[in-house]
Image 1 (cartoon, rainbow, N blue to C red):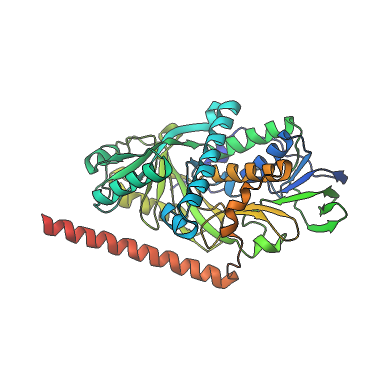
Image 2 (tube, rainbow, N blue to C red; image 1 turned 90 degrees about the horizontal axis):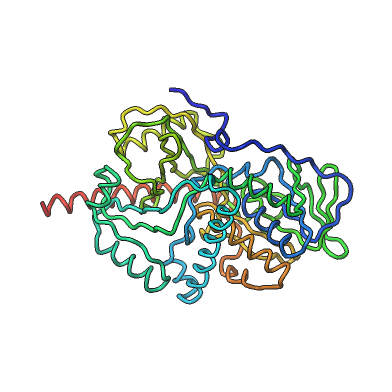
Length: 431
């Protein structure tokens, strides 16, 4: 099996971009953004558009972390289900949060159209059921339309299997308003545009310290100091030492992605992104050159498994055995930041520093939403970001939290397997 593990498919198919030099000396700005992923880029761009001077520090390269290693799905909502959000904050607040997520979706759609149409890679996201439950699918469809004005399409088992040739699937819900992107193309094009707009971007420039100073903060790097009234932390799980408030609240969780060789196949007959309704599900989509991108699994293990490609291929063939023995050309892991409550961390700490992080498990719309909220709060004194106060940072338990998350994931896998087994027995009795 040939596997190019040194790079992701996204990196291999994105235009090159020259690294931006590290800062030197003393630099004055209105906002210093720490982290060059999509949340950090959006924050910096939006404060610059509002007439503020923004400096962005990235420890490695733009979108080097989770922003460039994900599935590329853009659609409304959060990793935490709407039912759980309603239970936590009530229907009206849940609706307001959902509208914010939808605003993030439209922001990415607009920016992609403005920057480069080749960033966009498909339309629609399907979520398929692995148990036969037409009434449950209908209830969810009706609830999303009634409470969130989200017009989903319900596909029967027959319609679903016309698009996804697998006996594992039954009914599915399709969101035609969602879409798919090439995340590194987007991040690099966005970064170039932000620079042209005046944002000072510095790569290979980790922030080493943030300290209080007269009139704001000083952010120290190896060869520079950035003086700014506002500091925004968008570092996810890759640097949890620079800010204690979010560092203690973010769990580093790994997920995995594989990309096959070009395939001549008839198993997947849609260009939609696809996921399933299991608690521990897979996600996948057809990409360029007839390749299949397949993602899934969650683990607190930071190091990449030795046989990652084989592991993901087994998952793929368990759903679509007719694919045969496809070669895996690319396989990589992505270290995502998760909060225990499965919502983003967006807000301001008691010392005045801002944070927008923990986007693991969410669509890329939430990174845009967070950047917009940060910019509005800083430049316009808008307090819409406070809607995330019920999901404030809380200690994630350190190593004990990681053990708990791993055990929870294994428990979800077991429950998924038991649900599918019970469904098979029920259908066998009906027949």
